[in-house]
Amino acid sequence: MFWPDNVAVIGASNQEGKVGNAIMKSLKRKFEGGIFPVNIKEDQILGFEAYGSVIDIKDKVDLALISLPAKIVPDIIKECGEAEIKNVIVVSAGFSEAGREDLEDKIKKIVDEYDMNLIGPNCLGIYNPWIELDTIFNPPERQARPDPGSIAFLSQSGAFGAAILDWFSESNIGLSKFISYGNRADIDEADLISYISEDEKTDYIIFYIEGVKDGRKFFEAAKKSEKPILAIKSGRTEKGSSAATSHTASLAGKDGVYEGAFKQSDVIRINTLREMFNVAKALSFQPLPAGKKIGIVTNGGGAGVMSTDSLIDKGLTLANLSDETKNRFEKAVEEGEIPDHSTLKNPVDIVGDASSERYEKAIEIMLEDDNVDLLIVVCLFQSPALDKHIVEKLGKMQEKEKPIITIASGGEFTHSMSEKIEKRGIPVYQTPEDAVQAIRGLCECCKRTR
Image (cartoon, rainbow, N blue to C red; front, side, top):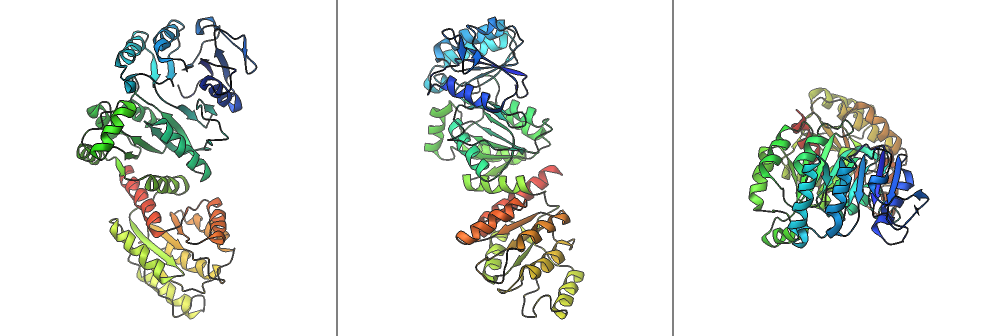
């Protein structure tokens, strides 16, 4: 399904605006495997020989994509079964989400009869950036594709998934897999957890869930997973739950039941889209901390206080600095590397005229303290003393192999510096609240991997 040598596109088209045309363009762009368009009316599609049926394709087909009206999809899946195609994705809508449970039941029976794997119907498709397998019908000029990475993103909603892919790509957050799974006529979220948990390219699993198909099966799969699972669950309210039911025929259920199941299976709950993005960025850029004791270095006292409040609110802990660290700071003051009016307890405030050299010294001391599991570095770039060399100095500090999270609030110049820092692999957040959401996610994942 995710590593095919070749793909058949059933419903492929030369006509602009058709889903089958868009899927062909997505595949043709970079996928190096075989592409077999299937269309009974065409001899050639986008330069590829077209076939009247999958049965006419001489090669063994690994994956078939179906983009045809719902009423004929069962017959097409049967043809795939007869052609011994084991993996099928149905992007077509018009099944249980539209009140046509009979059609969905029909394709499920055929899939079982021929021992096939099916994703969908009513889905966006899948994306494996490691082999440029792109079955998404949104054109790349409208929806970007992320580079390879370690996060698998699984979404019940295709449209929501598309927006996240765009956002991840813009922020250089890498993906191992993207899976839009729609109505789950066959493969459901529990099956996907079991598969992705064994995927060597994946370190973390992020879900967008409206409701699960089989609660017990999901619970057991999540409990067995050795990889952290983070879930953003919509339908928390009665009205939202009703909307989810009509969207992908989901059993959204009472939110409290999901909350309890997540806790018992160690699924990390994420409450907002912003929080999901913040956590994903940190996971993509930084290693996990050893614990939840946080150090802070700042050139603004107020920013240090706000960061501290946010940490405590999220159940995290300020690190108690060791005696050795305190002595090193005192020595740095004596040698003129840090001014004597700095605040040298956590949070460490190296005051508003801090240069990149002063930051380097303070960061080095903090990272070498065994009591500090993760370091927040607050950079207020409005100060003329803080020059561009902070970028290389922060990059150099990653050699300490402890996670570093940066906070930089401001406008155009701050954004420019933030981009440079992120190119060094250190995530930058505009507010303490965003940064602490990310840190909480890192710490929860750390607990999950122990």
